[in-house]
Structure formats: C-alpha cells, structure tokens
Image (tube, rainbow, N blue to C red; front, side):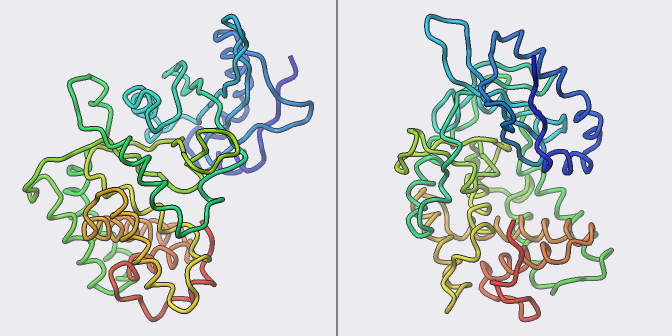
Length: 332
C-alpha cells in the first residue's frame, strides 16, 4: 500500500511538541494499522496530500463495512494532553452540533469521523453575518454536565481560573511587566469572580474552547447556512469562554475607521445571538488573550503577543497606544 506523505506544515510544527518528531517518523505504521482495523480504503489521488493542522493529520477514507461504502476521515493526532478528551466530547455531543464520531482508538489518538465539506468554512461567510450561524452551533454544544463518567475527562474552567489568579501575575512579573497593570488586573478580576472560591452560580456546560471560523464546516457540502464543529478543545465551564476565538481571527476585516469599536460590537453580537452574558464574554476574552500574550512573550513571539494585547485591550475598551495598527498585526 502506498501511503501519503505528511504535509510539511505538520512536520515542522511537530518539532515543537514533545515526541512529535518521533511520531512523524512512525505515523505511517499507525495509519496502516487503523486502515486495516477499521476496514478502510484511502480516498486520495496519487500524490495528493491529506489535510493537516499543527498537531494532527486528517486522511480521507472510504469505509468498506456495510452495504454501501461510506466517505469518512481518519484523524491521527500527535499525542498530547489537550487532545485526550476530544473523543469524550464528541461522544457526548453525539453528532449534535459537532462532527459525528464513528470510532475511536484512544491509546493511539486515532479517530474515525464523518466527512464534512473541508473546502469551505465559516470563514467564507461575511464577518457581520457570522454571529447567528456560530451561535446556532454554540447552543447545541452547550450541554450541561450529567452522570456519564465521560464528564470526568474535561478540565474544569473554575479550577483553572483559580490557578491563574496566582500564575498570571507571577509570569507578568517575571517578564518585566510587559503591559499595563490595569490589563492584568482586569484578567485577574474575572479569574477571581469565576474561580471556585468566588463563583456564586453553577451553570457549567461543555464548551468547545477553539470554536473559530475554520473549525466550523458546512453541514451540507457547499451550503453556507448550517455549520458543524470540528477539532474540539473541550472544557467544562461558562459558555462565554467560547467567544474569544471568534475575535482574534479575521482582524483584517474589521472596519478600518474604528476597528476596536467593530471588535466590541462583534463580541456583543456573538454573545447576544447565543444568549450569553456580554460582559462575561468580554471578560473571558481578556483572560484568554492575556494568557496568550504572556505565552507568546515567553517564546519571543512579539508580533503574536501584540495581537493578543490588541484584542484584550480593545475588548476592554482601552486599546493600548503602543501597539501596531490592527492591519500590521500578524494573522493567526
């Protein structure tokens, strides 16, 4: 069997993941094993590369088991902790708002998924028309926790926030206070109010924490009316935590006359469409972007850190003066 090559993008990014380089050398054996175990045929033209992100490859396949062959995809992920709960979330969603899970080999980080329209995404929809489409998926995915043992797999946002009240200011101090104190304090205020100690209400749901435009594919090929989520990074907590990825992408499409105002309006539109708390959606965005900025700075990625700080401060209503213009910020 002639197996496809890994896309160069994944080979490069794999070097930044523990064990990733070894995985790229051995992935062909895993692919062959899953093709045999799940009775699959490759569905690639000679020389055609599979799809790939930064930590996984997605190979189109045909399922042979059954009266009619069926199109699917085989997703093989470089083993890392963030990917562990993905099949558990997909099993709980059971195809409602998220791509259907057909089979999983958890030890191998291998998933067999229904095939969606990989040539289109919510990015193809004009920016100001996306909130309702995004919100429709969020409402389906925001299921409350239940009795299934699968729920134990997910990180708890309140516990994470409690830890961030200590780790974020410590890292900010280590890096020489690289942005104004008020922005750090804005992030900490949210962490303190939504952490385990400070919370006053319990309305946790399952959250797809990476629900950006390219992780929403058409439910019907070529039709940009209904979308299905892929590649979940699930957490248990406030549904408002899902808003941020829809803000740090597509910055170049914001109104050039008032990009910060447009960003805040977009945040409000997303929250309103999904029935979320606008203030909490903004607050969690500040937290997530402050965390991202500190991580980027720690790795010397200045442009990416500036993008995170622009989003965080703009959502908070006080865009930092020392940052580049939004058009000069790097794309994600």
